[in-house]
Figure (tube, rainbow, N blue to C red):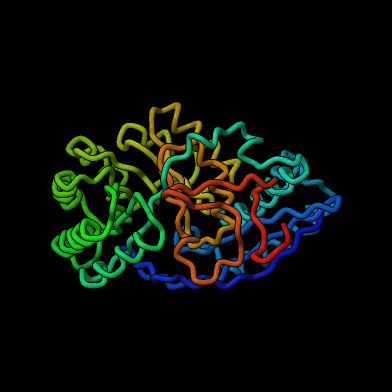
Length: 353
């Protein structure tokens, strides 16, 4: 098979600020695998979590090209063996994995979610993210998101350096503006992105629980997993690990101190490993969320193939883009659904059906 790549530049409608910094856009890489007249596509999105970049991805793909040239996309085990000891990042691995699944689905004439045996009727609404902002900005952003998208679930980023009082003020502004805007109840989630310590997390847990929050993601920084048992024992909200979970190998050690895990294709390296995370989490009685990085509809379309198999969705990055170059997943009544087209069901915007 032939492996090629190209860059896409994405610009966010609302810059996203979390506890670690702000992102207004990104340069992503589209990976194409061509074989027997069929082209499969996947996407790499850079982030500070994975350390991948467009430049690193292109260097990696140049190295992989000769290795993969004699191999067909259906030879997944052989491909895995060839790349097993390569030091490539997880996001470029995810892009190749997506492209291979897209090729396979197109070859079979079926969407990937059907190849996996999924039931599209089980897909739950996705959350849309409200980044860290001053309360006056939040009062503008929340109504805009609700009016434009019809979202049913909002995830508010907290853990800001300004402290817990600033977190409370911002969250209260989000709920206040939603009550004045939405014509339906809004489900609330919070993601601290590791911005709290145990004492602060426990204080916020009680405060947020009183305000109807459904769950909290990554309250403590990555590397502080040993402190999670004390938080878990005193928490009245379900705790979902995000940055603390990269692959299925990380799940078992967290099973007694969290209630769920948030997998992301860019973190874990693609759909193959994502499925292993799902099965491992289920075996340990944990809930599963699938989230995203700064991705277009291409990578979101790949993540949506797994939507029938998880409990919570956070597939929203494409809904915050001014210039999404792809279409595929649909968004109706708060639900992101994968396309019925073969493979990932994603195509360049303006392409013929």
